[in-house]
Length: 166
Ligand code: PNS
Image 1 (cartoon, rainbow, N blue to C red):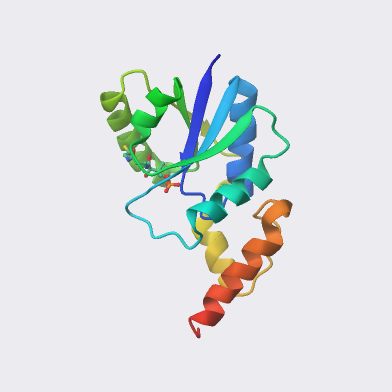
Image 2 (tube, rainbow, N blue to C red; image 1 turned 120 degrees about the vertical axis):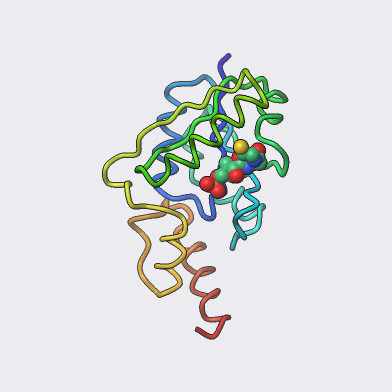
């Protein structure tokens, strides 16, 4: 059985993430979407909220599981006997950091192959930070996040802005 891990902050999961997960699920026997810790980011949503949002967004994919992990991705791969890390690649701006992470993970765990799937053209510009910014300013984010989580994400992010008094 070939297992792939789709790691990320997913703060929150977007339609772009779901597209990559669907395509990974078609390529591998089992996919684990892993809410991981990125020390460079301070997430708006808690780990349990992000896990819940991802679960609701991938409920239509029978070979996809959702988990969270605060440690090293390279170690998690070994625990799960996974052979690949699947990442979506949007544009040149993603490339440098993704290349660095892929090489570091391969050094830490030589069995870890990173597979990059290019995003669909319509998702080239989409990111969780854009979703957070738009929703915080009161925009309708229906085009960007899965319908299953839309109202919860929208409510929380609008509340964030209001609570800040901005
Ligand atoms: O969605 P993001 O924040 O761009 O994803 C980055 C993430 C979370 C996948 C990366 O920071 C990560 O792998 N974190 C887990 C800890 C780890 O292994 N760090 C070293 C990466 S080389």
